[in-house]
Image (cartoon, rainbow over all chains, first blue to last red; front, side):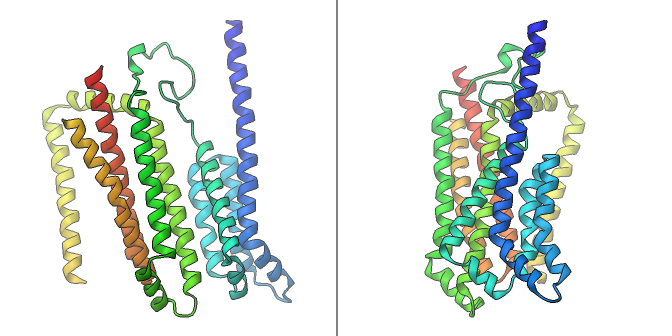
Length: 272
Length: 66
């Protein structure tokens, strides 16, 4: 019992130190990202005789999101609200500030910092699970030994193949933005004065989209495969235990919803 | 056999996400932001669908080998 308590205490201390390190990393990376984009425009604004308060608030908005997200350790705030909070400020940047961040090395620096930030934020917002282990890292008396089933044999190939496709996706995105002549022509038509700036911003936006997709749609579902297997078992059992009539009503409701969505899409297609 | 079908479908779904992302960039380049975001959302859904199918294939294969 005493040793159990010591183990629990040790686990708690380890988690607390990990949480502190995570908050420090998130703070450092987030601050670095903010400074690369908004530090110079903010200091420029402060030099004016009558600085615009609204503009300064839009520049400072990401920091507020970073602070709230770091304290609450909420994935929604650190991953989404923080990055979305950059958008109003970027739209309000002066041409000279835009020109400064459009430089190739500046873009690379922002991209690398953003990638590091997304990876760190994603790693710290929720408990992760390694294959064959419970999420909380402890074996429960309730869990049966056979509930943890291993997929180690086929898993590496499965993971590597999809990882390759995901990085192929990143390559396609970057190629389309910076090398594809069709996209370049459309950019030149739509943004005749600043096609490079438009390409840069679409590049950052797409990279952020890719990071979110890679984390939430790829790594999280695949890294928690054992958990997903147990959940699937529970769902299958629950479905089998559901009375036939309830099941039919549920299928009819989902089917009706799908038909309604399709009909709306068709209507909009013809009406607009 | 079912595992193989799920595997192939999953890979097709994940690979086809590239088309949606490419189309999204085309829309953004044309200043059609709503269409761009909608296409991106579809790409996300297709990617998730592909991953889910892959998971099903993996689980079926595991069930068979157990």
